Amino acid sequence: MNILGVSAFYHDSSACLVRDGEILAAAQEERFTRKKHDAAFPRNAIDYCLKAGGLTAGHKLDLVSFYEKPFLKFERLLSSYLAVAPFGFRSFLRAMPEWTRQKLWLKATIQNELGYSGKILFPEHHESHAASAFFPSPFQRAAVLTIDGVGEWATTTVGRGRNNRVELLSELKFPHSLGLLYSAFTYYLGFRVNSGEYKVMGLAPYGTPRYRDLILSELMDLKADGSFHLNLRYFNFVAGLTMTNENFSKLLGGPPRQSDSNLTQRDMDIAASIQAVTEEAMLRMARHVKEITGETNLCLAGGVALNCVGNGRILEDGIFENIWIQPAAGDAGGALGAALLAWYHDQGQPRAVDERGRDSQKGSLLGPKYDAKIFLQSERIAAMELSDEDLVERVARILAEGKVIGWYQGHMEFGPRALGNRSILADARSPEMQEKLNLKIKFRESFRPFAPAVMLEKASDYFRLNRPSTYMLLVAQVLGDRAKSNGVTEDFQTRLRTARSPIPAVTHVDNSARVQTVSEEDNPQFYRLLKEFHRQTGCAVLINTSFNVRGEPPVCTPEDAWHCFMRTDMDYLIMGNYLLDKRDQPEVHREKSTYVTIPD
Image (cartoon, rainbow, N blue to C red; front, top):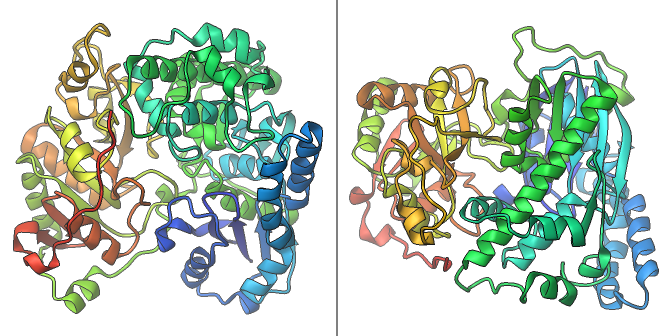
């Protein structure tokens, strides 16, 4: 049975194909259209999934499952506007045309786009999140926690998964939302909502949480079980076109930061404060779901589950023995959850977990794969073909010399993280590499941290981590005997440039790192490169960041990789077994970058 899952029309549209319970393919629309967080109907992603399964929609699809209930979401919007009328009229006028033209008629859209006349399911938004968290997990049973901005009405749910069923036990409803609270601070700090939240998380360690108590006393009433109420007199997201209002600005002591202005210590302290509050709320929610389910395993999904610092706190607190986080935790993963719900709930199929304790997400390497040779030959691009053995030896040596490479291999990742197939790699031992990558390669803020990729069996030599972190969704401390303390009294630039460990390029200012562990089974080629780099240098860690620049999604096709390579100061590009040296490329091919760095 072939089931297509679809997420569309809000942000991060995506598609997923499940065949007889196996996840065959999944991809986000943004990777094909090159529009970051593209919300359009995922025509390209669907085409890829169908092609990967050897299908045509009209003849071979058995079920289509959309990740939420559009009419229920429309009811919430109308109710919210009516509750605050006449305020919010401008926002109402802006939203309604799109709803009446497109979002309410999803069944017809799906039928017309796919030439499909079969059954279409519409599970609830958070039910899809919960399914995406539990069903691919390695657990036969687990507690389930989903946290995001808002679905139809729910913003947070607690539940449980057992065998082939997911059950939601309770929920927190709009407008009381941890995701929207974090997004409000993202907006206030001058970053883009639904895109810049990870910037707030990265900025937080540079500050002290001196606004934490103010947030907890004035902006929200946080209960012991993690539930809360927001004080809506400080927010504008229910009725207006902005996230916060004048009352919020007065409480925090000034207007929202302009996106092109320099960051101040106050901005860093605000980021630290909302991060601290978010972690506390996540911990309380985790303790509550543990108490009501009694389970020893936890599964997480929803956009807030991408807050890897909060995930690390839950793990470190020892509330659960094991946790598993959906790699595409945001709305993109809803397509996967919707498809799996159709298989297990609608079709009532049995579920079995891997006896070795592995998940069924296949390393999240579920996107398209391209033949780089065809592109290189058609464009007559200078490249050297190497054997597998020669490739890893040569690339490890190049990295050890301090060069930066684009690493383009195999199937594209599903989810926001580079996991070793669409990656930019560099030497984590270099004290200058973080600033170099941010300013000359990624064209982004210099404070942004980079993640380490480490051989799984060597991870505990570098980090306080005793388990796999395959999907780069856990933050762990660099081991204390390796890290040098760095006082908060120092100015921002001094803290940024201080080498805090033998792997300074991936050691954040608070001595933490967002770790990806790599095993030979997860990603054989990437693992071999790490192993060879360790053989040559004694270091089993590389910087691994997504193969893109600011404002663009990670690269998808060989053409995307080539253009990104030529617009940046990357030294080499590896495409399959082909090595491209920037110095060998004719000047006529070089593209001057149009990007500018954002002030700190």
